[in-house]
Length: 212
Image 1: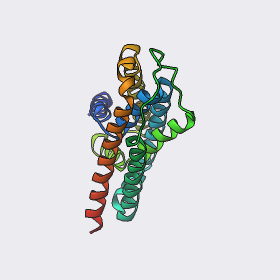
Image 2 (image 1 turned 30 degrees about the horizontal axis):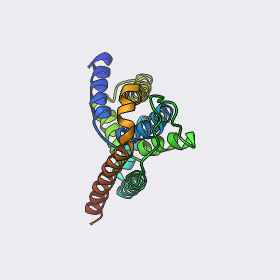
Image 3 (image 1 turned 90 degrees about the vertical axis):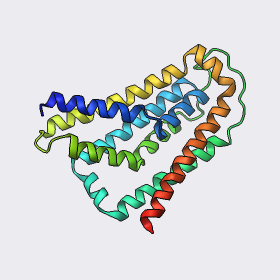
Image 4 (image 1 turned 60 degrees about the vertical axis):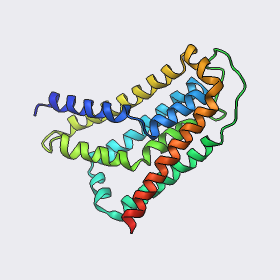
């Protein structure tokens, strides 16, 4: 398999993975519609930074260690599930907000760093992302592929992830879309919170089955 064929396969698999609804999609949508465009961009940056961690330990083989050691995998699974539940509970109790009109930048997150860390932890603690990158770097990418090429793949995956969620934020905060959705933003918050709690419970159920 040529490197270009390998790269295109990675890009296609990643596109389907990143575009599918999941924790990253939920938190970006929630923060973009609840706190505005800048907050959404901060969450997107945090998610992209979280990808760097997954790429890094996949490149050095730590992902294999995580997968082969049950206690490490179960610990990460539990922490990730509880964190999703925590931010889900915060979202599901959202209250109605004052009208801001058409200005998508008028709503600002009280602490910008918080949005970044929400994105970073949501992705960084996602054990499913760990398995995704483990699969990618052990099956799709050939063992004979040079480290420099693998590093290039990692850079692409990081940038592509960030670009996708920046685009999603931009799309959701277009003035016409934002104005129509803003009056219902607390309901969107609650919906995203319910999704995150459902994902949390699903992961905890998986953890329980593995433990028992």
